[in-house]
Amino acid sequence: MKVCRFAPFLLTAALLTACSTPSTDRSAGPPSAATDSSDAPPLAPMDTTAASATNVHSDTLKAVRTRHLFSSPSAPDLFQLVLRGDSLLGGEATFTITAADGTVIFREALSSADLEASMVYEMNKPDATRQEREAFLRRRMGEFFAPKNFHQPAIDPKATYQPGTVDRVVWDDLRKRNGTVSFQYLVGKEDGRRIAWSPLRRQVVRIGGFGG
View 1 (cartoon, rainbow, N blue to C red):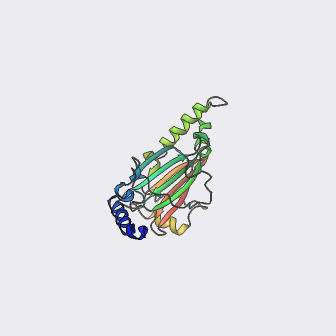
View 2: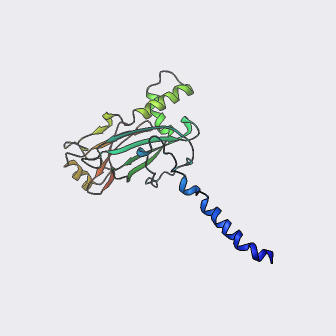
View 3: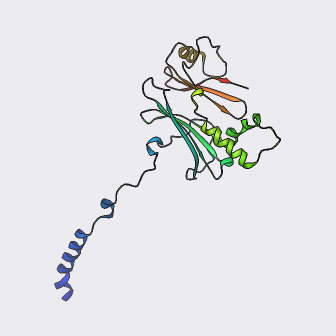
């Protein structure tokens, strides 16, 4: 009988206590963002055949970013090269181009070895120390988006078509457009690549090579 008599009182007290307790979800603010979070949009699935071997949760070792006109004549795209992994010489770099609306229009995985290989042309001795290799890799990444690697128009009107890249129809269309921009970068020792945004295909295409 005592249980029945005091149950309503206990229920009322419990309800008052619950109402007076602040909600953790409501009172907690959003998590603090990284300093450059506005320049680091979520990564899209890879659009190359090379599979990524780097854990997405591994630490970022070095990141370089720049903005440059590319897919739009008025709004610059964000170019990023982010190296992740357990060490500079054993990591994997992700090269992405993100349009002004946040869409990742290009993505490619490059290993540390891909970025380091061209060091052989600067060496004046048989071997390089680990410190020398790491210094070269940092410098190589720092120069990846140098102004000299961007060209306008994307294809010189007098250029000769290179078979094995984009198809001739797209290449001819780009050659007629003066406002297009190309970007070139080196993979390994000799694989010089030139890419551009194709208004005809509405995607990034490889338009040729250099070096080698």
